[in-house]
Image (spheres, rainbow, N blue to C red):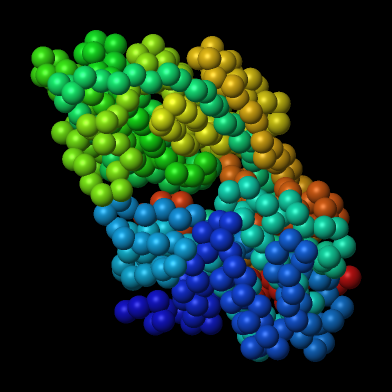
Length: 493
């Protein structure tokens, strides 16, 4: 069985077409053109706004013209993550999928169901002659994953809708009415380098096999952060084994929990045995600590193996000045990471967190990039102050960018009441009404369209933002059926 055999075919065929379009964040040219061409083929009005969001307009089914206009919204970009042993160019290659029982997966990469399935659902509504609906607008934003740039750039007045149904949630049966705000932090510094005598041994240190995941949705799972773990391994090597740090790199995206981190070091021959024992000791502790959440975690310490294109030639490499190396590694360890506080307002939901997302020490430059999230703005800023203190004590500068507030729930939402009733009528139980510890675009879009009545929904996805991302196939049928029924029950203007 392949993706083309799945039901509802109208949704899965659209998603298949989307998987053929390379579309990492900030490189949406191919998917944007595809969406415009698809709309033209189906005789659907479509255009881009002045910044690059794609907007489609679908007239009401005859007899339903008096219903309020609904905006179906998703984003066109995806998170480009792959396993280290997979050859895949996200700028050129399509996503290859396979059916694993009731799940759809990708072959060693992110699947892009976040948010390709949401876009596919909106496209299916637009083209299906069987869906009864009032006026529909489809908004497909760009660069959601790395800055929500398209949502932030959307101008008032471009859309005429009254209700927004965001299709970017990741659990069927849950309706989201609120989300966390976010803030990016970047700490940086410069350092002096020294040249090591050639008698030293050059070794590679790697922490890999972590599950990673979405830095909002999956942060509550307390999975291993490869950046923090490699710092735990490095500190005793630097402090007690005379190891010299050449470079360090871990993580690739702010909104993905780091799965791998790598360092290159010098080890004196007479200190090698002690260094190996230290690595083994810390690795044993880490594997025990994360046995449940990251069973494939491994720590590898082995002789450096030069390869074509490697940035570090062990015969001509400088290392980080000793005091600076220890200071930076301690700062990585001290940086807040993971769940900071659970919500009092919504039990079971994370209120505030930080993802220690990206670390690099290379050729005289050190940086750390983080993504903070919170449903409470003051808590987010308090966490930022703590982070600023950590890195300034380590001699670094720090800047904060990309901040946005969360989306506050609306208890009197008319569309929420409709969706709750429809769901119970269809499936015999109440949907869960929740807020999400992730940055849905609803909060930003409400700044330009404060009158919008908004709810977010979607099919069930697991481990988005990682190569383990997978979509639960039966949930897509349920969401499709539910969305169709909701559209026919939209209130009149």
